[in-house]
Image (cartoon, rainbow, N blue to C red; front, side, top):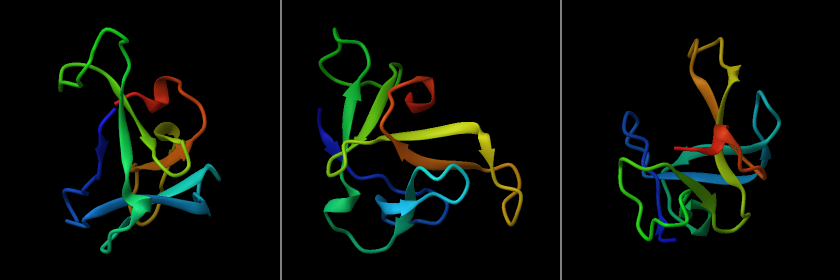
Length: 102
């Protein structure tokens, strides 16, 4: 798949990166916004359907971190209380289940 960088639309932080720190709620690999760019910002777009050569907005996909091979994940079990009540933790995991579909 193609390699892409993620941008947080609200904060305008230019890069979504993962690194070798535990995420605060699930203890998975942390994903955070950062203003500077490096290889930690690169995510590979993986089409879920094997018949799809390219991802389109109507189809499901996964984002796999290029350096660690972990997948971008969100799970409703991990919601922040403060200072952002109800916001889900975004992290990177080794699995490829429903929580890793976008």
